[in-house]
Length: 376
Image 1 (cartoon, rainbow, N blue to C red):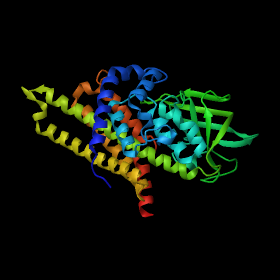
Image 2 (cartoon, rainbow, N blue to C red):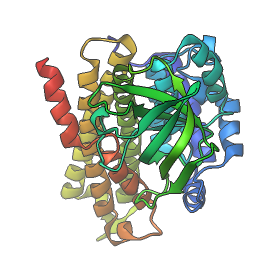
Image 3 (cartoon, rainbow, N blue to C red):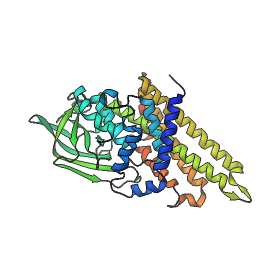
Image 4 (tube, rainbow, N blue to C red):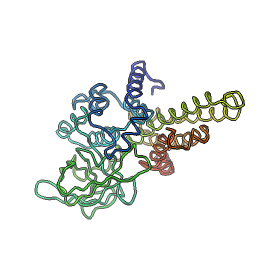
């Protein structure tokens, strides 16, 4: 287990931060969040053409760069810091990992190169209207039809589902329950019978959609009826990635609060010199560093495949969620009256903190998972 980043990893982080700082200012974030799509394909292709971030953790055999999970976590942290509006989490973290975990060799060869190059935007549809984040909530059915299958049901809270070119869908055989009968399927975004509707959400920098499948033709992905384990692994990997994304956003907020209190004058001196402000800033730093430690450890554990990495994924998700929300609240408070206004950028990260807190399961949900896994 490594406890620090290599020089190459730090250089990669610096390069990525510089690029995102230049290309994703808050003015651009505000412009994109007001659009229905939420991102622009030209910028997405430029991002991948210049930096190849979609290919970071995808093996070279499938058109990727072949780096590890730690490098993927670095990308997510910097994107969380910059609040990048793009389909990275949906396409690379959720869909690509689902294909890597469940797909056959031929399917990986066919599907992953397009995602790695940024040419194919993919999404993973697994959550339904019951609001559950595990496989027990899956009710959408897959019925055999000729040489393929037909999907019927509804998926909701599908990240970038309204714009994805390829949708990976978790469905079950009719009459099955629990982890039995679960399978992954792939559906084209323009398939007949597929209805896609953008949902209203608090965080408009991250678009969510509702997908209705009306007997939609689908191709199986991986072994039929054996998707439970790959799906669980995909969700744990996503929890690690989300934790790293959140600590990036939390650190950005902490730094913005510190910059503001050092600049804001009251009674002829910066308010950063007041003892109460010093204590608040110190608490924020401690919260960020503790959350970073959990997120970094989980990423390294996932990269090495240690036996406790699923438990560490839940620990990191819960810790980062709490830290991000608390720091977002503190940042608004330290900005005073202006912190509550639309003109101040703090609310952009505050809304992302709130949406990330519940996405993939609340802190309470992940603490319960942590205890179950720890006892095992």
